[in-house]
Amino acid sequence: MNGIRSARWLVLLVVSSCVACAGTPESEAFPTPFEVIAHRGASAYAPENTIAAFEKAREMGAVDVELDIQLSRDDVVVLYHDSTLREKTGERGTVRDYDASDLLEMDIGRWFDRTHPEVEESFTGTRLCTLAAVFERFGDTLHYHVELKSGDEALAARALDQIRAYQLERNVRFTSFEFEQVARARALAPDIPAGLLVRDASRLRREAGAGPEVSTASLQRKAIERAKAAGFDQVAFAAEDLTPELIAYAKDEGLEIRAWRIKNDGHMHRAIDLGANGMTTNWPDRVVRELLLRQRTRTAE
Ligand code: G3P
Ligand code: CA
Image (cartoon, rainbow, N blue to C red):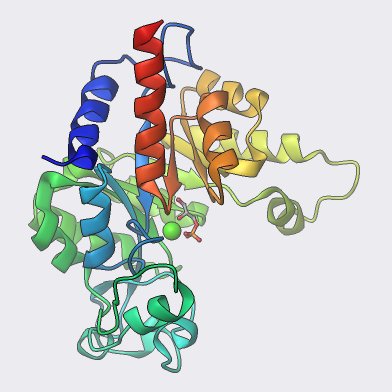
């Protein structure tokens, strides 16, 4: 067992032995529950939303992975983040313009190699994949944070078909920036946890048409209240937007709160220090290492 794998098991042991609480009590090294969620897989090390990225995440000790789904023209659930295919595959149009058989021929590895020269391994030839292929490969060894990326009304139902086919209801959470998409998932599968991703402060203000008299904090609180009223289980905010008040407010409302858009170690520390319940990160290995360090320091005190 290498260092990273043993770290994974220690983290699991530590996390699973804690009880849920608001904030980070003095007696604990980090907030609980706490999830290290590999963002689109370990996407700093392999092309996002591919089997290779989830494999890396698992090797690094992340049992939680986030992935983006959209529907192909023939209604197959395919992993892809962007609204168009151009930048990452070089193809025209959108995921919805193609049948799955065409999409699965598209190469996202060439883009990764070009944009990540610091990664020695070459991923050219790595193709897009379906949600079913991910479930087939990893089964219940991972927890999947399934982000409903497109606004397609059938998306949650088609994803649920796959989740049920692989009996992974207990390993899945639905998320989306689109409130209606989370609500659809919640209505279809009340037992599967549902989380609202909240836009970053500037976009939140823009979309709300907020003038100078409206505070960002009030819009953020409204998002939390809306998630709570709809029966969702969690909310997630951009790491830069997290404040102690925001985290306390979400927890007081009975919601877990996570951080997204971790751009650097400063964001990672901030999310942990403020008491978030986890984060989606392109570098899950760094978070695993940080949690282990904190745990070791706390044990030694
Ligand atoms: O965890 C949420 C995060 O995935 C949102 O950002 O751009 O990756 O969909 P994005
Ligand atoms: Ca995402």
